[in-house]
Length: 427
Ligand SMILES: [Zn+2]
Image (spheres, rainbow, N blue to C red):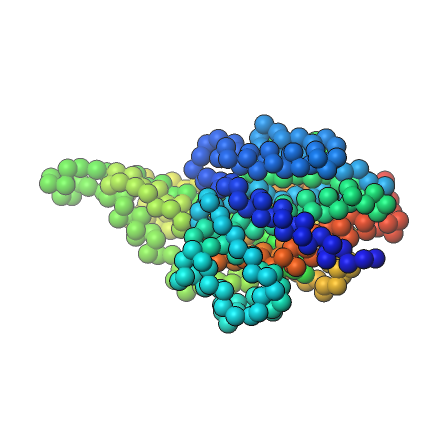
């Protein structure tokens, strides 16, 4: 077998550079779907490119998703998913990527802002990539490798398969989503109409790392109604909702259970928004944990703090609402380990030694897995997401694209396809 990654390299890079120049920032506060109309700009480009490649069922939906089919020789239908939007944390407009060819291991100064420097001394993953071609921003925007690296890799892989009809592979369904970064990526994603037996998101980072575990997540809102009176004549009457909110925040655990004091498998409570007036205030928290029981403890702690406040200030009204956001996908994926095992095997066939690590966040796949479409997450080779220091190695992106090729080939092999089909027949 020729070196698929080497063959894919130029095409994946070309696609990646084309896609990152299209601004697709999503918007947390918008009420529309997708949250920003400009996400369709990339959708239209992909729709056209998929038609040019000769794929079937190519569709840009009213919700902004792009779907397509590449038929295969046999085996289960494999879904491949990546998100087109980028994070609001940094600007995604006017992205000017630079490619540092055959990187020599010295500091990379970003040309648009010389204060922004990628240093191998601070960045062990970068330090191991001497000799790679490194794509960075100019230092004034994010790059958008999250997740346009995933988009480019899926596109590169299906372009390769479309150009090599002699390669046997499982049927493929492609899905490019919108609004992943604002937590609404699959709100309108119809699993039935997508029609895959299982899927993979290409939305991870370091090559070799396969994710089968995410946080379980909820949002907790605490609303405080005080009593506003003219400050000049309010002695003994005013109940200031802002001060009550601040009192509650002061009582949060200091040495643990916060994003800034936890790592690995530890969960947290994180106040991310505090708005209000004397009369009323709202505190918004996210609660995160890998363990459902511990997530509930975090929610209970917030309820207790709210109850304490209400007890101290009987004139105030304190209400708590909890909304489940997504669940740790591991409990679902463990029901069919072959789906994740196949990703490990595809990585091995690309010369990598795969490993697993829990993601301190969520993916589209976490929500899809809970809804019945098992969807672990595969590496893309992008690094330092949501930052002006975001970067990606071209060789790593090509390895990710080659992993997709190996994965869909593997699912057409009798050994793998057979396991799935006998399982489906039993069901
Ligand atoms: Zn992402």
